[in-house]
Image (cartoon, rainbow, N blue to C red):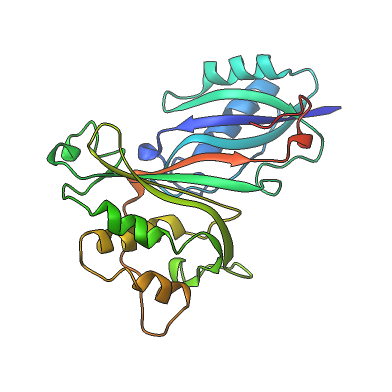
Length: 259
C-alpha cells in the first residue's frame, strides 16, 4: 500500500541549475529525491507543478510524491525539513487521493516577478532576489501593457522557439503590475492554466522596455497577434522570478481543501 502526498516547497534558486534533474548541476528535484530516498530506503520520484529555470525561486511550489503508507503528512513534513539543505524548506504537507499528480492535475499556476527601481536594488542582499534595474518605470504604462494579457491567447512570440509544446495557447486569468509596498520598485503577478518556457520572463522584459519608453505599448497586441517582424525584448533576468502557487480542484485532497 502507498500514500500520495502534496508538499508545498520554498526554495532559493540562486544555487540551483533549475528544478529538473540534470546530468550535471545541482537541482531541486535531485535534492528532494535524495532526501525521500534516505527516509524510505528506496528510490523516490517527485513531480512539481512547474519546471523552473536556473536562478528562479519558489515560495509555494507544489510537489507530489507517492510513499509507503507508514508515512503520515505530519511525520513527512518534520522529516523532510530535518534533512533538506538550508535553501529548501517545506511549508506544508497534506495527503492527496491516489492518482494525484502535481503537474497534470493543476488547474492554474501563479508567478510573481520583482523589479527594483531604486539604486539600493544593487545591494548584495537584494540583487539575487529581484531584477536590480535601478531606474524608474512608468507604472501606468506597465498596467496598460498588461491589460492585453487576460484571456486565451497564442503566446508563441513569448516562448523559446524550440519548445516542443503541441500548441502555445494559454489562458491568463490575472496579469497585474503593482507598486511594491516598501517603495523599492514594482511587482508583476500573473496566473494562467499553463506557461511556456521563458514566457513570464519574456513578458516582463518586453513590458519593462515599454515602461522605460523604449517601445510602444501597442507592441503587446501586435506580439499576441503574431504580426510578422515584431519581436519581444530580451527576457528579464531569472533571479526576479518566483513560482508562487498552484491551484487544484479540492476533491483531490482528503481534507476537501487544496494547498
